[in-house]
Amino acid sequence: MGLQTCDTCGKRFNWSEIYKSLLISYRPIRCNECAAEHRITFSSRMIAALLIVLPMNLFVFFISPPLHLSIPSTLLFGILFAILFSFVTPFLIKYRVG
Image (cartoon, rainbow, N blue to C red; front, side, top):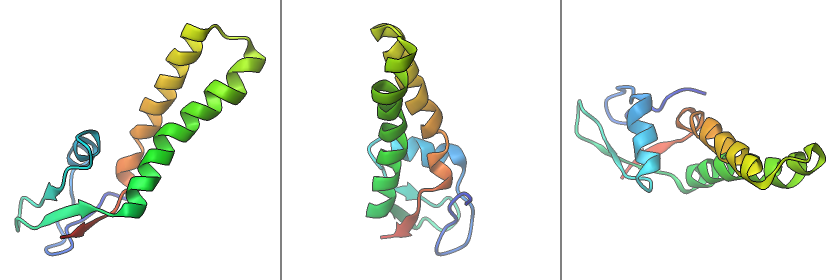
């Protein structure tokens, strides 16, 4: 588990570059050293979607009801879970030159 490196020259991408790519609908990342364009793999798209949506849904549907939380607080905590788990995704996402 670590940040992606360029397949061509081996330069490590910044966490913010990868996170920005995820936020802007999986935008390709261009290496600053060799200008190689990297695109996210399909399996990494699925991992990103699951890491953001699954914990939020688990909280909203299974953890929140026994705690008797109100709807606004449930939604707030669900969104916070999604944001927190999204911060981990740049370490798990893989890009390929393409």
